[in-house]
Length: 208
Image (cartoon, rainbow, N blue to C red; front, side, top):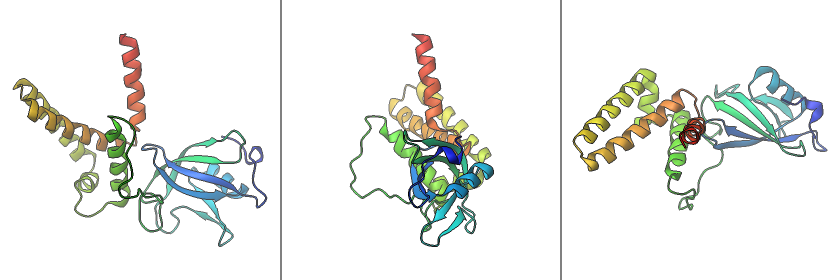
């Protein structure tokens, strides 16, 4: 990672920092760093920012406990803007939302036929951060990895049974349930779906 003296801070001594979930790739918030908060971020591997309204440093999660473990930092070509990749421990927004940026109702969905995987990954990440009562995904995260693994095993068995019975209608539903629980497992393990797709791409290339 670059030293602070390698970055270009604005006339107020600040640099914008876009905070992004390293796993789901969802944009969580936009904040600002000065040289000291940037150096503290590198030192502690947690996000530190500079409050323009209070004119002081602050560590994300200092009072709420919703810290952000830094997994990497990217820099633009002019070295005057940052993308901070994090593993969040709870909501990013002070209002209790997973992200400070919310989707508008009726917003057009793009991304092709597999865009549902990206959307589902985002929703699962949101559930883990906000833990809404009554949500099945919340239940899985609270029960932990053993429960999630049990559900993955159960759904895999149901897929096998449906396939052996050539019950394509049942197979569709069981395969969908298996994919969902696999995505929950990836989130619990802090493993981005992109990493799995990258391996899949390599496997495909090797088999050609």
